[in-house]
Length: 96
Image (cartoon, rainbow, N blue to C red; front, side):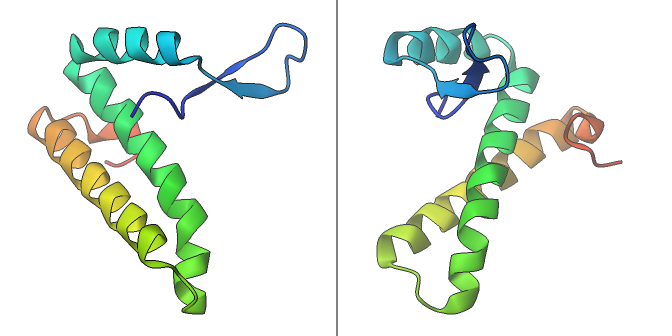
């Protein structure tokens, strides 16, 4: 799930670029050592995907693949929310 995370590029500080596959693997390994950081990263990435797909769902023109992607993103958000709630750290995702 780390691949969609983007970083600012040195040549274009306002632009973002996807992480390389090797960097995504490294980041995923590092995040596994920090469950709260991992939960926040997963939540934020999934929330972005839900934000992208929600308007499509409202039109009724969503493909089965997009519907599966939306459901998976919502499941990821729920799992991350559970981890953060158990640690009493919902504030990390903007919830009190």
